[in-house]
Length: 242
Image (cartoon, rainbow, N blue to C red):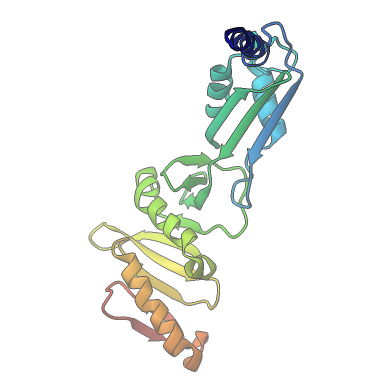
């Protein structure tokens, strides 16, 4: 019995040495599995872009010895790109490197008066402009980077996650009132009226009031009856006829 246990232990140790000790240190990286998560709102960076980044930084792993591949350096190189939010890099079996990349997802395209446009994501990160993405709400007017990265980013995230308003609102226009405070007007995709939202505070309540009005009244009077809807105060809606 003891001899059988000893033989079993020797066999297990041999298996562990052969199969559980990790990649051969002299083994070459023969393949790179690069996965770039994409959707219609995050098409900024493709696989070729990532590969070129790594090659320019001299850290593209294919052909390198696995022991010389620095996964942290690869992650840092990719993460330095403003369009990237997450990176995971690890060594796999048979000389393969796996790299998974997630892009930042913009919630709003910002076009400030007299300045170059950019995108902003839900975290408030400003993203350089590389062309407009489909169905993304556009914010224009008197916008600085602080406003864009805070209140506007939060509001853009709300619009994007609420299917009704994501389909309804096409443009956000930012201006200052008589007190010098930034207030917002909304331009819908259907109809050409202006929706005056006011300050970006309690906007969920304000828009819920407007949605109730849409559901009960617009079907009867039509979209074209009103030129302006003032929902600055959540308790009332002031409509201006054409």
